[in-house]
Amino acid sequence: MKIRLYNSLNNRVEDFEPINPGKVLMYSCGPTVYDFAHIGNFRSFLGADLLRRFLEVAGYDVIHGMNITDVGHMTEDDGSGEDKMVVAAKRIKEDKKSGKVPEGSVDNPDDPYQIAKYYTQAFLDDSTTLGLKVAHEYPERMFHATEHIQEMQELIQKLIDRNHAYVSDDGVVYFHVESFNRYGNLSGNTIDQLRSGQGGRVSEEDQASKRAPEDFLLWKPDPSHIMKWDSPWGEGYPGWHIECSAMARTRLGSDVIDIHTGGEDLIFPHHECEIAQSCGASGEEHFARFWVHTRFLLVEGKKMSKSEGNFYTARDVLEGRVTGRPVHPAVLRYELIKTHYRSNLNFTVKGLGDSAQAVTKLTDFLNKANEASKGQVGEVGNDHPIVSQFLEALADDVNISAALAVVLPWISKSPEDPAEALGVLHKIDGVLGILGLAEKGVQQGDSSDSSDFDAEAACRELDQARADKDYDRADALRQQIIDAGYDVQTGKDGTTAKKKLA
Image (cartoon, rainbow, N blue to C red; front, side):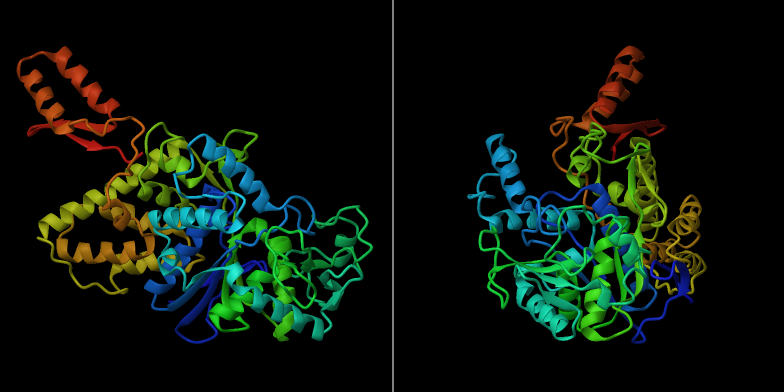
């Protein structure tokens, strides 16, 4: 099976072949643990997870790494602005007053390591809830920036030795962009554009300590910084971009990797700077041979922002602050992966409802096939017609829409061989990652406060009202069950209620 992926580096779809046959080295830019991850973040993370799962089902051994940025970077790329850990500390203090932070989670908000630990655990909880495979490999494959300061310093020294970096008069270490003639190949931002301020990161402020305004920070001596480490250039902290170059090389064991993923907002400056650092230090032509970027997420057709009031974390959605009732993790995962990664996803309440219906169809098919086969699962290979069509769709630049167009019509029919159908479904879900989440049950913390509601008893009472021809009472009971968060159906065998997934 020929796999083709869109490579942002060359702006075209290309045939994918790993450097080492059968093995894929893949790195994803992970979270900054100064706050809870939002649904836009998770769209990118789950897009990488989908790609990884597809490659694994296709037969590859995927070594997938993801960083956790827990260094207290500044709010501005050039090292100015406010420390993000200080910003997080202010938020934590307010949240502790209002009871939003669980007792004992952060005893001292002024300790940046406690803040990082709190948000790291929150991210791990959210990630495992949504089925992100790399989260189950923490800390081996999901690793902290603060644990790789020495590797960052060694990389910086190598860049200085190779004349790609310099120590300025004020002691700050910068990467000298002009020394790397391929800078701009990923983003299209040329040095001339950067110098005229068109690249999106050059201010008009005085940058006299730099050789050129486009040069970017590698290490900043600053004894007053909240998180700081000793270095040959003075006590201070690393720049944002250097950590991924150092960690990818260290944890994946290679100067050149197969795939690097991230959101489209990271193309410039972050990924452009990563390439310059990594290739500048190694002398290799590539840092990553394929760059795979996920497009932005919209909310009800608008850009997600706090000022618009439509900024949602994954927890906001799961706990019902978007729809008015809890959303099952399988539904949110489906919603975030169902649109092709190179198209904007419009996140809507209606879309969540549609995703809930799709997840329900998948679980109903699973349950019926499982019952019909008495739990027997047939052995199915990638050459099975349905599996083959599903994988061929994904081999075309992870075309998830086409892949789902294979699955959904298939599950709408009763299978001739239930055991074989289960084998097919398990193979497909090895990529989708939906059914394992769906089997875990509905998210706890139901905002409808119906945890003590006895749906079965209400259904029996409704059937009795119908038998007594007390239709007003029956209608009232039906509405009561619906209001408690259930779908209600009445058939020849009586009334049944199923908890809504969204």
